[in-house]
Length: 556
Image (cartoon, rainbow, N blue to C red; front, side):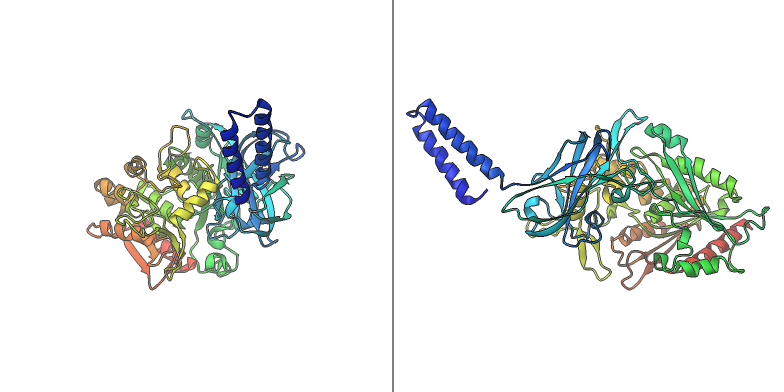
Protein backbone atom coordinates (compact mmCIF):
# COMPACT_ATOMS: atom_id res chain seq x y z
CA UNK A 1 0.00 0.00 0.00
CA UNK A 2 1.48 3.43 -0.92
CA UNK A 3 2.46 5.48 2.13
CA UNK A 4 0.34 8.50 1.11
CA UNK A 5 -2.78 6.35 0.80
CA UNK A 6 -2.06 4.61 4.12
CA UNK A 7 -1.76 8.03 5.83
CA UNK A 8 -5.02 9.21 4.28
CA UNK A 9 -6.84 6.14 5.54
CA UNK A 10 -5.56 6.70 9.08
CA UNK A 11 -6.56 10.37 9.10
CA UNK A 12 -9.95 9.61 7.60
CA UNK A 13 -10.56 6.95 10.22
CA UNK A 14 -9.56 9.27 13.05
CA UNK A 15 -11.78 12.03 11.71
CA UNK A 16 -14.72 9.69 11.39
CA UNK A 17 -14.20 8.57 14.98
CA UNK A 18 -14.12 12.15 16.32
CA UNK A 19 -17.32 13.14 14.54
CA UNK A 20 -19.08 9.81 14.84
CA UNK A 21 -21.31 10.85 17.74
CA UNK A 22 -22.53 13.97 15.97
CA UNK A 23 -22.76 12.60 12.45
CA UNK A 24 -25.97 11.24 11.08
CA UNK A 25 -26.38 7.64 10.03
CA UNK A 26 -26.22 8.84 6.45
CA UNK A 27 -22.85 10.51 7.04
CA UNK A 28 -21.43 7.39 8.70
CA UNK A 29 -22.63 5.24 5.80
CA UNK A 30 -21.03 7.62 3.31
CA UNK A 31 -17.74 7.55 5.21
CA UNK A 32 -17.81 3.77 5.30
CA UNK A 33 -18.30 3.63 1.54
CA UNK A 34 -15.37 5.98 1.04
CA UNK A 35 -13.19 3.84 3.29
CA UNK A 36 -14.24 0.65 1.46
CA UNK A 37 -13.49 2.20 -1.91
CA UNK A 38 -10.04 3.23 -0.74
CA UNK A 39 -9.40 -0.23 0.70
CA UNK A 40 -10.35 -1.83 -2.62
CA UNK A 41 -8.02 0.59 -4.37
CA UNK A 42 -5.21 -0.62 -2.10
CA UNK A 43 -5.92 -4.21 -3.08
CA UNK A 44 -4.93 -3.32 -6.63
CA UNK A 45 -1.36 -3.01 -5.39
CA UNK A 46 -1.21 -6.68 -4.35
CA UNK A 47 0.75 -9.38 -6.14
CA UNK A 48 -0.76 -12.71 -7.06
CA UNK A 49 -0.98 -15.52 -9.58
CA UNK A 50 -4.25 -17.31 -10.29
CA UNK A 51 -3.89 -20.88 -11.52
CA UNK A 52 -6.61 -23.09 -12.97
CA UNK A 53 -6.97 -26.04 -15.32
CA UNK A 54 -9.63 -27.04 -17.88
CA UNK A 55 -11.50 -30.35 -17.84
CA UNK A 56 -9.84 -31.18 -21.16
CA UNK A 57 -6.51 -31.39 -19.31
CA UNK A 58 -7.80 -33.27 -16.27
CA UNK A 59 -11.40 -34.41 -15.87
CA UNK A 60 -11.63 -34.60 -12.09
CA UNK A 61 -10.48 -32.61 -9.06
CA UNK A 62 -6.81 -32.42 -8.09
CA UNK A 63 -5.17 -32.70 -4.70
CA UNK A 64 -1.51 -31.82 -4.77
CA UNK A 65 0.74 -28.78 -4.90
CA UNK A 66 0.83 -26.00 -7.49
CA UNK A 67 3.91 -23.96 -8.32
CA UNK A 68 4.71 -20.78 -10.19
CA UNK A 69 8.21 -20.32 -11.58
CA UNK A 70 9.67 -17.07 -12.92
CA UNK A 71 12.93 -16.85 -14.85
CA UNK A 72 14.97 -14.31 -16.75
CA UNK A 73 15.99 -16.84 -19.39
CA UNK A 74 13.44 -18.20 -21.85
CA UNK A 75 15.19 -21.54 -22.29
CA UNK A 76 15.03 -24.06 -20.86
CA UNK A 77 11.40 -23.49 -19.95
CA UNK A 78 10.93 -22.06 -16.44
CA UNK A 79 9.83 -25.29 -14.73
CA UNK A 80 13.15 -26.85 -15.80
CA UNK A 81 15.07 -24.08 -14.06
CA UNK A 82 13.42 -24.35 -10.62
CA UNK A 83 13.80 -26.61 -7.59
CA UNK A 84 17.56 -26.60 -7.14
CA UNK A 85 19.15 -25.30 -3.95
CA UNK A 86 21.71 -23.45 -6.06
CA UNK A 87 19.13 -22.12 -8.54
CA UNK A 88 18.35 -18.46 -9.07
CA UNK A 89 14.83 -18.87 -10.49
CA UNK A 90 12.25 -17.72 -7.90
CA UNK A 91 9.37 -20.14 -7.46
CA UNK A 92 6.44 -20.44 -5.07
CA UNK A 93 4.31 -23.40 -3.99
CA UNK A 94 0.90 -23.93 -2.38
CA UNK A 95 -1.18 -27.01 -1.56
CA UNK A 96 -4.52 -27.58 -3.27
CA UNK A 97 -7.20 -29.98 -2.08
CA UNK A 98 -9.98 -31.14 -4.39
CA UNK A 99 -9.35 -28.34 -6.88
CA UNK A 100 -11.95 -28.81 -9.63
CA UNK A 101 -11.60 -27.89 -13.31
CA UNK A 102 -12.22 -24.16 -13.71
CA UNK A 103 -11.57 -23.38 -10.06
CA UNK A 104 -8.67 -21.12 -9.15
CA UNK A 105 -5.70 -21.67 -6.87
CA UNK A 106 -4.01 -18.47 -5.71
CA UNK A 107 -0.35 -17.82 -5.06
CA UNK A 108 0.11 -14.46 -3.34
CA UNK A 109 2.35 -12.67 -0.85
CA UNK A 110 1.51 -15.20 1.89
CA UNK A 111 2.78 -18.14 -0.22
CA UNK A 112 6.30 -19.36 0.67
CA UNK A 113 8.97 -19.10 -1.99
CA UNK A 114 12.61 -19.84 -2.78
CA UNK A 115 15.08 -18.18 -3.05
CA UNK A 116 12.78 -15.15 -2.70
CA UNK A 117 10.72 -15.75 0.44
CA UNK A 118 7.68 -13.78 -0.80
CA UNK A 119 6.36 -12.31 -4.02
CA UNK A 120 7.18 -8.96 -2.42
CA UNK A 121 10.88 -9.91 -2.67
CA UNK A 122 10.90 -10.64 -6.39
CA UNK A 123 12.97 -7.97 -8.10
CA UNK A 124 11.11 -5.80 -10.64
CA UNK A 125 11.59 -6.77 -14.25
CA UNK A 126 10.46 -8.84 -17.20
CA UNK A 127 10.05 -12.55 -16.52
CA UNK A 128 9.08 -15.75 -18.24
CA UNK A 129 6.52 -17.41 -15.95
CA UNK A 130 5.06 -20.90 -15.92
CA UNK A 131 2.89 -22.95 -13.56
CA UNK A 132 2.91 -26.67 -12.81
CA UNK A 133 0.83 -28.95 -10.57
CA UNK A 134 2.32 -31.94 -8.77
CA UNK A 135 -0.63 -34.33 -8.54
CA UNK A 136 -0.96 -36.45 -5.40
CA UNK A 137 -2.47 -39.90 -4.84
CA UNK A 138 -4.43 -40.91 -1.76
CA UNK A 139 -3.00 -43.88 0.17
CA UNK A 140 -4.87 -45.91 2.77
CA UNK A 141 -1.93 -47.47 4.55
CA UNK A 142 -1.80 -50.65 6.57
CA UNK A 143 -0.76 -48.67 9.65
CA UNK A 144 -4.20 -47.01 9.69
CA UNK A 145 -3.11 -43.64 8.28
CA UNK A 146 -4.58 -42.08 5.15
CA UNK A 147 -2.27 -39.63 3.42
CA UNK A 148 -1.83 -37.81 0.12
CA UNK A 149 1.54 -37.89 -1.65
CA UNK A 150 2.99 -38.06 -5.13
CA UNK A 151 2.98 -41.58 -6.56
CA UNK A 152 6.20 -42.00 -8.46
CA UNK A 153 5.66 -42.78 -12.13
CA UNK A 154 9.15 -44.26 -12.57
CA UNK A 155 10.61 -40.78 -13.01
CA UNK A 156 12.35 -40.72 -9.63
CA UNK A 157 10.18 -38.12 -7.82
CA UNK A 158 11.01 -35.42 -10.38
CA UNK A 159 7.70 -33.57 -10.45
CA UNK A 160 8.66 -31.44 -13.46
CA UNK A 161 8.81 -34.58 -15.60
CA UNK A 162 6.36 -36.90 -13.84
CA UNK A 163 3.62 -38.31 -16.14
CA UNK A 164 0.17 -37.01 -15.30
CA UNK A 165 1.32 -33.70 -13.82
CA UNK A 166 -0.16 -30.59 -15.44
CA UNK A 167 1.67 -27.47 -16.62
CA UNK A 168 0.95 -24.21 -18.40
CA UNK A 169 2.26 -22.40 -21.41
CA UNK A 170 5.10 -19.97 -20.78
CA UNK A 171 4.10 -16.30 -20.56
CA UNK A 172 6.31 -13.24 -20.63
CA UNK A 173 5.14 -10.65 -18.08
CA UNK A 174 6.41 -7.60 -16.25
CA UNK A 175 6.42 -8.00 -12.47
CA UNK A 176 6.71 -5.07 -10.08
CA UNK A 177 5.59 -5.48 -6.48
CA UNK A 178 5.18 -1.71 -6.09
CA UNK A 179 2.69 -1.52 -8.96
CA UNK A 180 0.98 -4.84 -8.20
CA UNK A 181 -0.06 -7.55 -10.64
CA UNK A 182 -2.55 -10.37 -11.13
CA UNK A 183 -1.30 -13.01 -13.58
CA UNK A 184 -3.59 -15.82 -14.71
CA UNK A 185 -2.08 -19.15 -15.80
CA UNK A 186 -3.93 -22.20 -17.12
CA UNK A 187 -2.58 -25.72 -16.66
CA UNK A 188 -3.57 -26.85 -20.14
CA UNK A 189 -0.91 -29.51 -20.76
CA UNK A 190 -0.25 -32.94 -19.25
CA UNK A 191 3.17 -34.58 -19.01
CA UNK A 192 3.02 -37.77 -21.15
CA UNK A 193 4.15 -41.24 -20.05
CA UNK A 194 7.87 -41.88 -19.98
CA UNK A 195 9.52 -44.07 -22.56
CA UNK A 196 11.47 -46.88 -20.96
CA UNK A 197 14.90 -47.58 -22.42
CA UNK A 198 15.01 -50.73 -24.56
CA UNK A 199 16.80 -53.87 -23.52
CA UNK A 200 20.01 -54.80 -25.31
CA UNK A 201 22.21 -57.89 -25.43
CA UNK A 202 24.02 -56.67 -22.31
CA UNK A 203 21.44 -54.53 -20.47
CA UNK A 204 18.08 -55.77 -19.16
CA UNK A 205 15.38 -53.82 -17.29
CA UNK A 206 13.27 -55.45 -14.60
CA UNK A 207 10.12 -54.10 -12.93
CA UNK A 208 8.01 -56.24 -10.60
CA UNK A 209 5.14 -55.55 -8.25
CA UNK A 210 6.07 -55.83 -4.60
CA UNK A 211 3.39 -57.58 -2.60
CA UNK A 212 4.93 -56.37 0.66
CA UNK A 213 4.86 -52.69 -0.35
CA UNK A 214 1.46 -52.99 -2.02
CA UNK A 215 0.02 -54.31 1.22
CA UNK A 216 1.62 -51.54 3.29
CA UNK A 217 0.55 -48.66 1.01
CA UNK A 218 -2.85 -50.04 -0.07
CA UNK A 219 -1.86 -49.30 -3.66
CA UNK A 220 0.14 -51.20 -6.32
CA UNK A 221 3.86 -50.58 -5.76
CA UNK A 222 6.73 -51.62 -7.98
CA UNK A 223 10.45 -52.16 -7.53
CA UNK A 224 12.98 -52.92 -10.22
CA UNK A 225 16.53 -53.28 -11.40
CA UNK A 226 18.79 -52.59 -14.35
CA UNK A 227 20.97 -55.61 -15.00
CA UNK A 228 24.31 -55.62 -16.83
CA UNK A 229 25.27 -59.07 -18.11
CA UNK A 230 28.85 -60.23 -18.66
CA UNK A 231 30.39 -61.10 -21.99
CA UNK A 232 29.49 -64.62 -23.07
CA UNK A 233 26.42 -64.86 -20.84
CA UNK A 234 24.16 -66.35 -23.52
CA UNK A 235 26.90 -68.64 -24.81
CA UNK A 236 27.36 -70.33 -21.43
CA UNK A 237 23.85 -71.27 -20.18
CA UNK A 238 25.23 -73.49 -17.45
CA UNK A 239 27.41 -70.81 -15.87
CA UNK A 240 26.44 -68.97 -12.67
CA UNK A 241 27.85 -65.56 -11.76
CA UNK A 242 28.61 -63.38 -8.72
CA UNK A 243 26.53 -60.20 -8.40
CA UNK A 244 27.55 -56.59 -7.73
CA UNK A 245 24.63 -54.72 -6.17
CA UNK A 246 25.05 -51.00 -6.85
CA UNK A 247 23.08 -48.58 -4.70
CA UNK A 248 22.17 -45.00 -5.52
CA UNK A 249 19.52 -42.57 -6.62
CA UNK A 250 16.78 -43.67 -8.98
CA UNK A 251 17.93 -44.01 -12.56
CA UNK A 252 17.48 -46.34 -15.51
CA UNK A 253 20.99 -45.94 -16.87
CA UNK A 254 23.08 -49.13 -17.03
CA UNK A 255 25.30 -50.01 -14.07
CA UNK A 256 28.61 -48.10 -13.97
CA UNK A 257 27.37 -45.90 -16.83
CA UNK A 258 28.05 -48.77 -19.25
CA UNK A 259 28.43 -47.41 -22.77
CA UNK A 260 28.02 -43.70 -21.96
CA UNK A 261 31.09 -41.59 -22.59
CA UNK A 262 32.11 -39.81 -19.42
CA UNK A 263 29.22 -41.19 -17.35
CA UNK A 264 29.71 -40.33 -13.71
CA UNK A 265 32.97 -38.61 -14.62
CA UNK A 266 34.70 -41.99 -14.87
CA UNK A 267 34.24 -42.96 -18.50
CA UNK A 268 31.31 -45.27 -19.19
CA UNK A 269 32.65 -45.99 -22.66
CA UNK A 270 36.03 -47.01 -21.24
CA UNK A 271 34.27 -49.22 -18.73
CA UNK A 272 32.19 -50.82 -21.51
CA UNK A 273 35.35 -51.66 -23.45
CA UNK A 274 36.83 -53.28 -20.33
CA UNK A 275 33.61 -55.13 -19.43
CA UNK A 276 33.32 -56.65 -22.90
CA UNK A 277 37.01 -57.54 -23.23
CA UNK A 278 38.36 -61.09 -23.05
CA UNK A 279 40.30 -60.70 -19.79
CA UNK A 280 37.79 -58.99 -17.54
CA UNK A 281 35.99 -60.59 -14.54
CA UNK A 282 32.72 -62.26 -15.47
CA UNK A 283 30.10 -60.86 -13.09
CA UNK A 284 26.55 -59.50 -13.20
CA UNK A 285 26.11 -55.87 -12.11
CA UNK A 286 22.73 -54.71 -10.78
CA UNK A 287 21.34 -51.30 -9.88
CA UNK A 288 18.11 -51.19 -7.88
CA UNK A 289 15.10 -48.95 -8.54
CA UNK A 290 12.95 -48.37 -5.46
CA UNK A 291 11.42 -44.86 -5.36
CA UNK A 292 8.97 -43.96 -2.59
CA UNK A 293 6.29 -41.27 -2.23
CA UNK A 294 8.87 -39.25 -0.25
CA UNK A 295 12.05 -39.59 -2.32
CA UNK A 296 13.56 -41.14 -5.40
CA UNK A 297 15.07 -43.89 -3.24
CA UNK A 298 13.97 -45.82 -0.15
CA UNK A 299 17.47 -46.19 1.34
CA UNK A 300 16.97 -49.94 1.02
CA UNK A 301 15.72 -50.42 4.59
CA UNK A 302 12.44 -50.92 6.40
CA UNK A 303 11.00 -47.74 7.89
CA UNK A 304 7.84 -46.59 9.60
CA UNK A 305 7.01 -44.03 6.91
CA UNK A 306 8.18 -45.76 3.74
CA UNK A 307 7.26 -49.30 4.63
CA UNK A 308 9.17 -52.60 4.27
CA UNK A 309 11.53 -51.69 1.43
CA UNK A 310 14.42 -53.64 2.95
CA UNK A 311 12.29 -56.79 3.07
CA UNK A 312 11.00 -56.15 -0.46
CA UNK A 313 14.54 -55.95 -1.86
CA UNK A 314 15.93 -58.98 -0.01
CA UNK A 315 12.84 -61.21 -0.06
CA UNK A 316 11.30 -60.31 -3.42
CA UNK A 317 13.70 -58.55 -5.81
CA UNK A 318 17.02 -60.33 -5.15
CA UNK A 319 15.41 -63.83 -5.22
CA UNK A 320 13.76 -62.87 -8.52
CA UNK A 321 17.10 -61.74 -9.95
CA UNK A 322 18.95 -64.83 -8.69
CA UNK A 323 16.37 -67.07 -10.34
CA UNK A 324 16.17 -65.26 -13.68
CA UNK A 325 19.85 -64.35 -14.21
CA UNK A 326 21.75 -67.40 -12.98
CA UNK A 327 23.34 -65.68 -10.01
CA UNK A 328 25.30 -67.58 -7.36
CA UNK A 329 23.07 -67.82 -4.30
CA UNK A 330 25.73 -67.46 -1.64
CA UNK A 331 26.87 -64.55 0.58
CA UNK A 332 30.44 -64.53 -0.76
CA UNK A 333 29.07 -63.89 -4.28
CA UNK A 334 26.94 -60.88 -3.32
CA UNK A 335 28.95 -57.66 -3.00
CA UNK A 336 27.85 -54.07 -2.55
CA UNK A 337 28.89 -50.60 -3.62
CA UNK A 338 27.41 -47.15 -4.04
CA UNK A 339 28.10 -43.49 -3.42
CA UNK A 340 26.39 -40.78 -1.34
CA UNK A 341 22.85 -42.08 -0.78
CA UNK A 342 24.08 -45.34 -2.25
CA UNK A 343 27.11 -45.19 0.03
CA UNK A 344 24.90 -45.18 3.13
CA UNK A 345 22.77 -47.95 1.65
CA UNK A 346 25.69 -50.19 0.75
CA UNK A 347 27.10 -49.88 4.27
CA UNK A 348 23.69 -50.32 5.91
CA UNK A 349 22.86 -53.44 3.90
CA UNK A 350 26.19 -55.03 4.87
CA UNK A 351 25.88 -54.03 8.53
CA UNK A 352 22.24 -55.11 8.85
CA UNK A 353 22.71 -58.34 6.86
CA UNK A 354 26.31 -59.50 7.40
CA UNK A 355 25.30 -63.11 6.77
CA UNK A 356 23.71 -62.25 3.39
CA UNK A 357 26.34 -60.04 1.70
CA UNK A 358 30.06 -60.67 1.25
CA UNK A 359 31.44 -57.15 1.52
CA UNK A 360 30.96 -53.50 0.66
CA UNK A 361 33.02 -50.88 -1.14
CA UNK A 362 31.26 -47.78 0.22
CA UNK A 363 31.87 -44.38 -1.40
CA UNK A 364 31.29 -40.97 0.30
CA UNK A 365 28.24 -42.14 2.29
CA UNK A 366 25.47 -39.99 3.72
CA UNK A 367 25.92 -39.42 7.48
CA UNK A 368 26.88 -42.69 9.15
CA UNK A 369 27.03 -41.06 12.61
CA UNK A 370 24.27 -38.66 13.59
CA UNK A 371 26.58 -36.70 15.85
CA UNK A 372 27.73 -35.41 12.48
CA UNK A 373 24.47 -35.13 10.57
CA UNK A 374 26.49 -33.11 8.13
CA UNK A 375 27.60 -30.44 10.64
CA UNK A 376 24.77 -30.93 13.13
CA UNK A 377 24.84 -33.04 16.29
CA UNK A 378 21.17 -33.94 16.38
CA UNK A 379 21.44 -35.31 19.94
CA UNK A 380 22.87 -32.18 21.54
CA UNK A 381 22.48 -29.11 19.33
CA UNK A 382 19.35 -27.00 19.94
CA UNK A 383 19.21 -25.79 16.32
CA UNK A 384 20.11 -27.20 12.93
CA UNK A 385 20.61 -23.69 11.54
CA UNK A 386 22.93 -21.99 14.02
CA UNK A 387 26.17 -22.95 15.68
CA UNK A 388 25.61 -23.14 19.47
CA UNK A 389 27.49 -21.05 22.01
CA UNK A 390 27.05 -17.60 20.45
CA UNK A 391 24.92 -14.68 21.62
CA UNK A 392 25.87 -12.23 18.87
CA UNK A 393 26.86 -12.68 15.23
CA UNK A 394 25.62 -16.28 15.41
CA UNK A 395 27.24 -18.30 12.58
CA UNK A 396 24.81 -19.90 10.13
CA UNK A 397 25.54 -23.56 9.53
CA UNK A 398 26.59 -24.45 5.99
CA UNK A 399 24.95 -27.34 4.20
CA UNK A 400 27.09 -27.44 1.07
CA UNK A 401 30.54 -26.06 0.17
CA UNK A 402 32.99 -26.20 -2.70
CA UNK A 403 36.09 -28.36 -2.34
CA UNK A 404 37.96 -25.11 -1.58
CA UNK A 405 35.62 -24.42 1.35
CA UNK A 406 33.39 -21.70 -0.16
CA UNK A 407 29.87 -22.05 1.29
CA UNK A 408 27.17 -22.36 -1.36
CA UNK A 409 24.05 -23.25 0.63
CA UNK A 410 23.17 -23.10 4.33
CA UNK A 411 21.02 -25.46 6.36
CA UNK A 412 18.45 -22.68 6.69
CA UNK A 413 18.28 -22.13 2.93
CA UNK A 414 17.93 -25.83 2.18
CA UNK A 415 15.14 -26.10 4.73
CA UNK A 416 13.43 -23.10 3.12
CA UNK A 417 13.60 -24.86 -0.25
CA UNK A 418 12.03 -28.02 1.19
CA UNK A 419 9.29 -25.95 2.83
CA UNK A 420 8.38 -24.55 -0.60
CA UNK A 421 8.55 -27.84 -2.48
CA UNK A 422 6.12 -29.65 -0.21
CA UNK A 423 4.29 -29.56 3.11
CA UNK A 424 4.15 -32.52 5.52
CA UNK A 425 7.57 -33.82 4.47
CA UNK A 426 6.62 -34.15 0.79
CA UNK A 427 9.42 -32.08 -0.76
CA UNK A 428 11.24 -35.20 -2.08
CA UNK A 429 14.47 -33.51 -1.02
CA UNK A 430 17.33 -34.67 1.19
CA UNK A 431 16.45 -33.62 4.75
CA UNK A 432 12.86 -34.78 4.48
CA UNK A 433 13.94 -37.98 2.73
CA UNK A 434 16.06 -38.78 5.78
CA UNK A 435 13.11 -38.01 8.07
CA UNK A 436 10.93 -40.41 6.08
CA UNK A 437 13.54 -43.17 6.31
CA UNK A 438 14.91 -42.72 9.84
CA UNK A 439 12.12 -40.97 11.73
CA UNK A 440 8.75 -41.80 13.29
CA UNK A 441 5.29 -41.27 11.83
CA UNK A 442 3.60 -38.12 13.09
CA UNK A 443 0.04 -37.98 14.38
CA UNK A 444 -1.11 -36.75 10.96
CA UNK A 445 0.36 -39.81 9.25
CA UNK A 446 3.28 -37.95 7.67
CA UNK A 447 6.95 -38.09 8.74
CA UNK A 448 7.58 -36.22 11.96
CA UNK A 449 10.17 -33.48 11.29
CA UNK A 450 13.58 -33.69 12.93
CA UNK A 451 13.65 -29.90 13.01
CA UNK A 452 11.28 -27.05 12.29
CA UNK A 453 11.97 -26.00 8.69
CA UNK A 454 11.52 -22.32 9.54
CA UNK A 455 13.26 -22.02 12.90
CA UNK A 456 15.71 -24.94 12.89
CA UNK A 457 14.66 -26.11 16.37
CA UNK A 458 15.53 -29.80 16.75
CA UNK A 459 13.01 -32.27 18.15
CA UNK A 460 15.06 -34.38 20.54
CA UNK A 461 12.45 -37.18 20.59
CA UNK A 462 12.79 -37.62 16.83
CA UNK A 463 16.60 -37.64 17.09
CA UNK A 464 16.53 -40.36 19.75
CA UNK A 465 14.03 -42.40 17.72
CA UNK A 466 16.46 -42.35 14.77
CA UNK A 467 19.30 -43.53 16.99
CA UNK A 468 17.35 -46.15 18.93
CA UNK A 469 15.87 -47.70 15.77
CA UNK A 470 19.29 -48.39 14.31
CA UNK A 471 19.66 -45.76 11.58
CA UNK A 472 22.73 -44.16 13.15
CA UNK A 473 25.10 -46.81 11.79
CA UNK A 474 27.99 -46.01 14.13
CA UNK A 475 25.72 -46.28 17.17
CA UNK A 476 24.20 -49.48 15.77
CA UNK A 477 27.63 -51.04 15.30
CA UNK A 478 28.70 -49.96 18.78
CA UNK A 479 25.66 -51.48 20.50
CA UNK A 480 25.59 -54.67 18.41
CA UNK A 481 29.29 -55.33 17.83
CA UNK A 482 29.42 -58.41 20.04
CA UNK A 483 26.82 -60.09 17.82
CA UNK A 484 27.66 -58.88 14.31
CA UNK A 485 31.35 -57.97 14.60
CA UNK A 486 32.72 -61.45 13.75
CA UNK A 487 30.51 -61.58 10.62
CA UNK A 488 31.78 -58.21 9.39
CA UNK A 489 35.49 -58.94 9.63
CA UNK A 490 37.23 -57.81 6.45
CA UNK A 491 33.98 -56.74 4.78
CA UNK A 492 33.94 -52.95 5.31
CA UNK A 493 35.74 -50.49 3.02
CA UNK A 494 34.88 -46.78 3.07
CA UNK A 495 36.20 -44.03 0.80
CA UNK A 496 35.52 -40.28 1.09
CA UNK A 497 37.21 -37.01 0.16
CA UNK A 498 38.61 -34.91 3.00
CA UNK A 499 36.70 -31.90 1.62
CA UNK A 500 33.42 -33.64 0.87
CA UNK A 501 31.02 -30.94 -0.32
CA UNK A 502 28.38 -32.01 2.20
CA UNK A 503 30.77 -32.56 5.14
CA UNK A 504 30.16 -36.31 4.99
CA UNK A 505 33.79 -37.07 5.84
CA UNK A 506 33.18 -35.92 9.43
CA UNK A 507 30.87 -38.83 10.27
CA UNK A 508 33.23 -41.28 8.55
CA UNK A 509 36.05 -40.18 10.88
CA UNK A 510 33.83 -41.11 13.83
CA UNK A 511 33.04 -44.50 12.33
CA UNK A 512 36.75 -45.16 11.84
CA UNK A 513 37.45 -44.18 15.47
CA UNK A 514 34.90 -46.77 16.60
CA UNK A 515 36.32 -49.59 14.48
CA UNK A 516 40.05 -48.91 14.94
CA UNK A 517 40.37 -50.78 18.28
CA UNK A 518 38.41 -53.80 16.95
CA UNK A 519 39.51 -56.67 14.73
CA UNK A 520 37.08 -55.55 11.97
CA UNK A 521 39.90 -55.14 9.47
CA UNK A 522 37.95 -52.22 7.98
CA UNK A 523 39.55 -50.05 5.31
CA UNK A 524 39.22 -46.26 5.33
CA UNK A 525 40.71 -44.01 2.63
CA UNK A 526 40.44 -40.23 2.44
CA UNK A 527 41.03 -38.26 -0.72
CA UNK A 528 43.59 -35.50 -0.08
CA UNK A 529 44.02 -32.68 -0.67
CA UNK A 530 40.71 -31.00 -1.41
CA UNK A 531 38.83 -33.98 -2.78
CA UNK A 532 35.11 -33.35 -2.78
CA UNK A 533 31.88 -35.32 -3.07
CA UNK A 534 32.16 -38.05 -5.67
CA UNK A 535 35.82 -38.92 -5.09
CA UNK A 536 36.81 -42.54 -5.33
CA UNK A 537 40.40 -43.80 -5.50
CA UNK A 538 39.90 -46.27 -8.33
CA UNK A 539 38.18 -46.51 -11.70
CA UNK A 540 35.05 -48.63 -11.93
CA UNK A 541 37.00 -51.22 -13.88
CA UNK A 542 39.59 -51.42 -11.11
CA UNK A 543 36.78 -51.65 -8.55
CA UNK A 544 35.25 -54.67 -10.28
CA UNK A 545 38.65 -56.41 -10.33
CA UNK A 546 39.08 -55.76 -6.59
CA UNK A 547 35.64 -57.23 -5.94
CA UNK A 548 36.32 -60.34 -7.99
CA UNK A 549 39.61 -60.91 -6.18
CA UNK A 550 37.79 -60.79 -2.83
CA UNK A 551 35.04 -63.07 -4.11
CA UNK A 552 37.58 -65.63 -5.31
CA UNK A 553 39.39 -65.49 -1.95
CA UNK A 554 36.16 -66.05 -0.02
CA UNK A 555 34.96 -68.77 -2.38
CA UNK A 556 38.14 -70.75 -1.80
